[in-house]
Image (cartoon, rainbow, N blue to C red; front, side, top):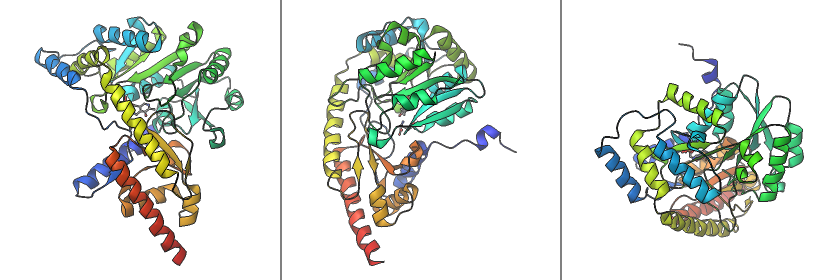
Length: 398
Ligand code: PMP
Ligand code: GLU
């Protein structure tokens, strides 16, 4: 059977695939240290699990409305009010199977063949592929490292064409850890409004900020809010990656279309998970404070240790839980041609998992996730250091 053109051109998700490969190697008895997939290493809070069990036991096991249950939509509106100073009505909220599904559905809802969406590089792996699956064209703007991986408004201005439908922003950012300031968001928003563009704001890492504040671009003004669709979910904030619960907020017409698409694809987000999500959003958020403090300590430790490694550098991340490490000089010294080969050598020889930057559109970097225990981080960095020393000696001998 000949596969569709769409699928023939589809690049599988590097983050998901590398995570699966690492899990398989562990199952085969390898002792790996993973800086790979971005997945909180803390358990889902117990009160959320209790709420899920209660929902199951009380028969919350049938279909719901496609866009989700009213009670959860209301809990999400309370979250926006409390945490982002944003007022939404339930008909401006839709619920699906993870932020990823919400992005996928949004692109299906707004893109016609040839429509352009601006994507900032480095970008999260799935944006360009999902845009292409919807028939759209990802227009990639490079956010240069010299500019601390921040957008240049001039580059943005030049990328806008009559076909531009919108832009995807992701702050705090995966993989660079960049968190946009209010003045930067205001400049982006101004240009978007002038060009009648939709702002897609992926805020999945909003709580993971260190010494800085997350600002939702939608909170800048009522006008900006009208042009913004916020994408968020519980995967990171409540350590619920496997539960698959995401949501979107914004223009009621787009939100309704997204719900209709959910209805014709997966029907609805898992019913008892929706009930558990109410407990997650309405319940005590203290666990998160503890998690963020722990990530902050790991981030500091990693930056300090990596600062002593030869031939590597990183733009200091102030958000998310990744370090985007530039290894160009190191690869040159050790004789590696590309980050894919370098990452594979790290896996095979040092038993350390990283994601090659090519997954995010850049050739000189590896992404290290610090969503893993301090003990693993210490061991992983020791291995990385030894790998560099061994390879340097071996390369000099040749
Ligand atoms: N956006 C970004 C930037 C991400 O890193 C991820 C990965 N968790 C997602 C969206 C999707 O998250 P999920 O589908 O697990 O809610
Ligand atoms: N977003 C996480 C990452 O970038 C999880 C994997 C995925 O959804 O791609 O590693």
